[in-house]
Image (cartoon, rainbow, N blue to C red):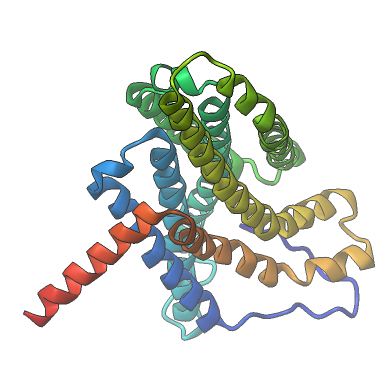
Length: 303
């Protein structure tokens, strides 16, 4: 997607080596595919939260695959195997831009779904399984994927329109505010809610079970807060880039910031590689599944 303008300053564009782009893309692609396959194969991970995490990993897989393919196209174009401005290449570039937009909108939509799921888990623990059924989870995922696909096509088709760019940035900011509010509210109200659960008349074993449920839910919320923090750190520079294009397209200081565009792209790609490492570090079940899959594949190769 073209988000650069003609430099009017002495700030040179910062170039990132193509092999670095390619390496990050391949690593993140392999990691996120591992997450998707793990969630599909392990029945213990067939819960709403892990379904949303699987969706997030699938969107990350899409972004990694798209950027890896785009990097290969750049390599082929530099050696004269592809026309940089050919009609087929331009159409393929539009497709890749659409997939990248879809992966972004899908990632933040998945984070929204996860935040709402964690909210229900913590504050409506006794009715959670009645509210977040797998049928509803699948319906939510279907809406997310269809909406993201349509939005991505519209964004790429009308990206030169300042209105579309404003909508793109506004979606990021509003979603960011909603998710931050939900997590802040969850952590601030968790102790009060725990006190209400503890006050319910039941056996000590029942209270202990509810306390374990709350502890598990809060650990899940903390994991997803870390994931969301990584998302904000990796994506915010790119959105600041878009905002500066709208606000000060010819300002020399803004141009200096936009000269770092390729570094912003590295951060965006790195996010897809960071997420699976956080899953593995925070989830014992995912670590066990990863280990089981890797060890079984290793045994098959030896035999």
